[in-house]
Image 1 (cartoon, rainbow, N blue to C red):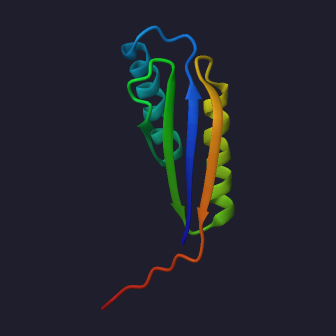
Image 2 (cartoon, helix red, strand yellow; image 1 turned 90 degrees about the horizontal axis):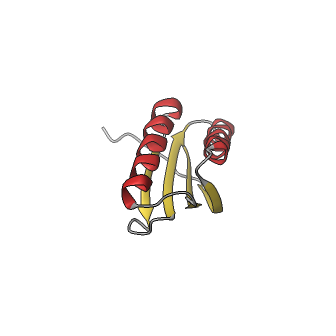
Length: 102
């Protein structure tokens, strides 16, 4: 089992209110979940109008597939016209083993 986690700090320079921010992020999160089947959520700076922190997680049996999916997600977010990625932290959890107990 291969697990990847990422934390992205975003800038939303055009937002004028928390309502604007929530609308942009809600759309982004729903589309990302639907298209890429990953866990993604706003995890920080929730009361800041022009910044946000997203947490992402993927679990897969193929490390290369995890890397590919995460790259596609980050690329899609970078292409969003109202969002800029300030920083990204990516972590891989290795040697995680699952055993069934009978």
